[in-house]
Length: 265
Image 1 (tube, rainbow, N blue to C red):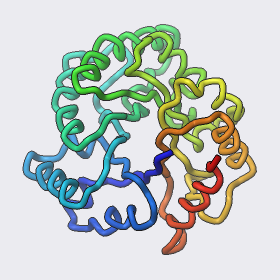
Image 2 (cartoon, rainbow, N blue to C red; image 1 turned 180 degrees about the vertical axis):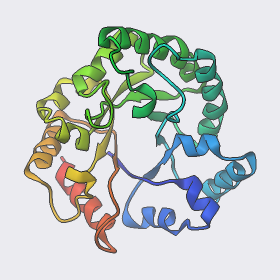
Image 3 (cartoon, helix red, strand yellow; image 1 turned 120 degrees about the horizontal axis):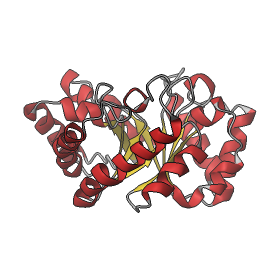
């Protein structure tokens, strides 16, 4: 198992506040999970600084989230496949350069279905976009996409692991799998057993408790059940905290220690 924390590495480098990133290895984290949109929006000069910082400090960035900006539509009548391709061809070489090989495709604003749009049509069109536009770029750069089910308050489309599997099955590619995010599972009241049912296709985990709280002082009963199911499923991939700021100075360190003890087999 590899453990990470979600941080904006581009903003940290721009602001000269990289101490938080450097502390991750001291706390016992294996990597950081950065944001694709920040990497895509960075100027060439800033991106070069990010690359230098990564190399000079041995920072590992195997996973990124926030795959698409909100104004790049992925569903509905106004999807511009050329714009999607151009965006991927801009950002994928950068991701490859910093060692990223897994991307979280949440992007709720981008993939939200227009009001009144037929859901079945939405699944067909979104699956086709992933298969025909995204997968070829994934193959070129050896990068895998993980569909992230989002709670209904965040997006009206692909809300459960079963929904995510509908896309994964339709695309039928080793480059397209799932992520299980505990905050969305908790909010959607998904049964913990869904983790084991989908375990062959889950490539990444996001962990936080209700209200995106960093679990540094213990778990809610429901999160404890989800983590117990994750452990029993045999999952052995990447796990990232995607949570609010810790309440105490050593909160991240405490949370990581507890999570490792919880998932240790």
